[in-house]
Image (cartoon, rainbow, N blue to C red; front, side, top):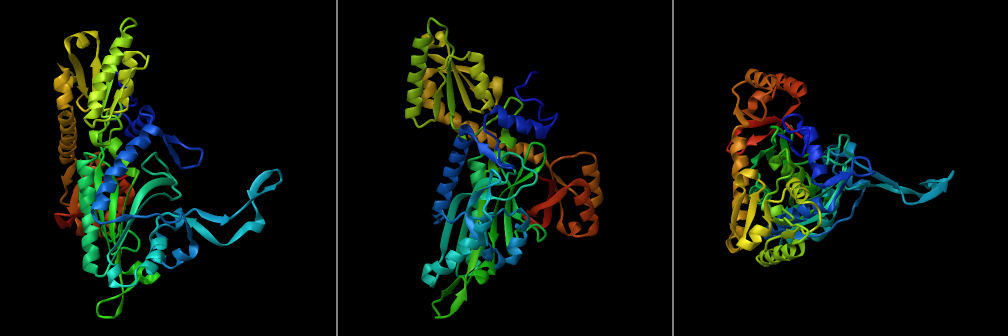
Length: 478
């Protein structure tokens, strides 16, 4: 069967993914090495994702702020353990002026900065410095902050959305009076991420704590949400960190308690990024293109008038009347009344993953009906319905699509999680080409033999099983 995206997922998942991004007109590589340009349709998806996340962040009592892009290198020196995890990825600003030298603009040798600045790879340090000034008393706590910004990490092997040198994200940073409050909040944001991914992105996740070998540099505990892609690989989609007092002590975040004593505070950080978009696309899409859950689809419904020269004006006007009724009901709607061929319009919106496609021809207009097709189910869902009934039921149909997409991934994920009794069994499964997550006793992974499997099969410990932390999930990852 002919497909829109070649090669197919089965033939070459990695190449299929790259071609999917192009076919759906989501993003492209930029002239800056390792960076991407997110195109309007891709950015519209991110805006919807961001807005849904922002609602949940604010519901947790967090306030949005914005901190500088450039961070003094001295700030990083205050938290050596944290910086060690980012040092190889940091982009550094060393000059403040360009000068024409030998016919080309170059950094002016006389404009070298006394102290270099790091383009933020993350903002714990500069936010920690601000918190040391903003927190003085127990009355200032808890302090909960978040920012929506771009960051820079010099990625050596870029891949659109999954790994780019520059990417967009939210990073939350909270301060508490006690460790109990901080850890509870880190876990709370961890659960918030899982709920968001299930209910907004229609992606169930594996929740758990990172092992000591994998946790965030400078954290006491790192909690992660892991997604399983169609090819069985893991994608770390969001993390929440209990930072203990490491940053509070490095940056002097102290508060005067009710007992009149000065104490160091306890901090957390938590973040998700445009990497979630890559996970969204890889989780749901097929060989014909993108499949989007209605919650984050720029257009939840596209109406395609099937016109002929003699009825184009009348049919387009009729389609727009229906579109306006749907729009008034709060549905994101587009009427594609361009002069492109009907088959080309259909393929365009199939590739872009619009949840519900509506076709109206002259016969349907006369009969007061229309033909609808669900993108997640394809041709098998094509049916003809009454116009007024559809308008009143459209939201319910979209809710059903959202629900069914989540259930479909849950069912698929169950086939991709395998309990493993020994390292020999794990190696046998990997050697045979079995894909997915492998659940094994954590203490079996803390030896040289397992380290050899990491090197040989490019696997890693994803997280401890939240339901039984004596087990760990192991998988290949993005």
